[in-house]
Image 1 (cartoon, rainbow, N blue to C red):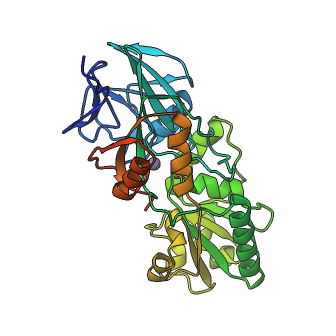
Image 2 (image 1 turned 60 degrees about the vertical axis):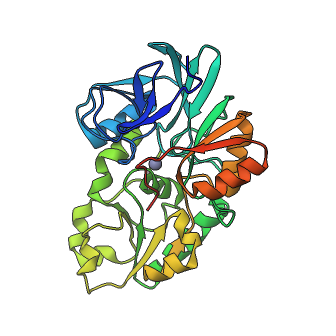
Image 3 (image 1 turned 180 degrees about the horizontal axis):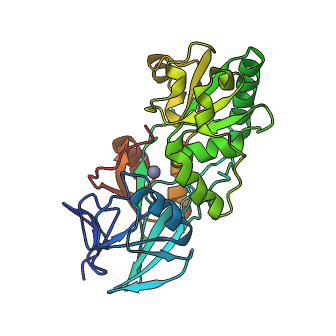
Amino acid sequence: MSRELVVQRPEGLYCPAGDFYVDPWRKVERAVITHAHSDHARGGHGHYLCAASGVGVLRARLGDIDVRGLAWGEPLQVGGARVSLHPAGHILGSAQVRIEVAGAVWVVAGDYCLSVLGDTNPTCEPFEPVRCDCFVTEATFGLPIYRWPRHADVFADMNAWWQANARAGEASVVGAYSLGKTQHVLAGIEPTIGPIYAHPAAEAINAAHEAEGVALPALRPWSELSDPAALRGALIVAPPSANAPWRWQRAARVREAFASGWMQLHKARHRAGLDRGFVLSDHADWPGLLAAVAATGCSRVIVTHGDEAVLARALTERGLECGAFRTTYGDEG
Ligand SMILES: [Zn+2]
């Protein structure tokens, strides 16, 4: 038996002992999905396995698929591999995949978020460290410059910004991806400041969150925004690419912001011509990545996507064996 519990194939990351793929980017028969973001969860696979709490959002994205939901920590024998799923703290239902074969344990973490400040995301289950021999990690924000501020401070800033805009009769638009970030923003803002709208692209995803018990504020119908008067004082959460009514409204001033880890870079904020950038990420920052790796007790790490070289160097200096998988996974924008 090879000591490699997961290998890289043209279709994606493959577990030979269990004959399945984790987040494959080409069509396969058996796919274990860490989470429903489009770069990790693609359509067209034969069978899907994901966390039970992630089935709703996966179906909201991929439609009627053959999917089995697994409770957190519930072991499942897949061929010669024992598989279980553990919360990754990234978005609703996001899972780390624990794979055990003949006493060896690997964990494929997918995208994850662990805050050394103790911040958690109210829209999903908090990251759970899982002991393993080899940890397959992302490195989206794998540079020492990435250190997230406290969520409470970010949302205090966002509320103050919205309130000031509302007093001036302006609309506040927060750019946020439909799955994950939109719900994180909605769950975190102060809903009494004014009316709240979310782009229709997030409608089914919001419903899937509410079905899993995630509390979101009451939203106004999007169609109201065709009336310019509705824009005054409103908070509008929409994906950055949205072809949205406020782009052609002249009756009200619109302030635009974006919520992302990339907003820590002043250059990114500037280039986007934004009024404000809120540093709110659903990925681990640099201290979070190092803490997550340390918490697994692993002796080996394989980095999948992001700033992998810098993270690998830092982990090698800490005495870990480091490798890399080439994947097609993206970032948070
Ligand atoms: Zn993701």
